[in-house]
Length: 132
Image (cartoon, rainbow, N blue to C red):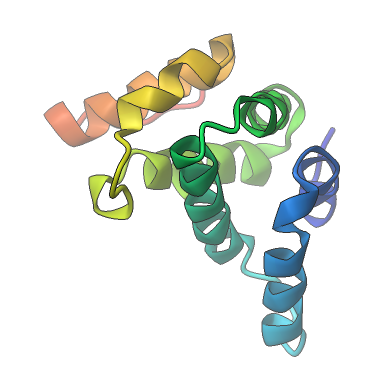
């Protein structure tokens, strides 16, 4: 099971270009007892949106493979963070300039796509996101 403390390791292997952002995050939050990983996922969303804008398909495939693992192998925190912390940010049109959220859909694997749709339904209909 992937736990909060280890969830970024496979992501950093898949997306080494995100390492400087992660290191800066760690430096900024080093005094906190409980690392607010959700905030780092916003940085990751911006990183992935930039990769989408650059049409860096390899990075996106590797990143979304990790996101799928977070959904399948993560503990409750990791699964929720993957959905509410990351997928929701990737759908935030305010973060997109030359891209749109729908452009991520070809990279989503089955479980992540299921939760992507749940986030959409939450914003469209107020449907509660459940981990079924």
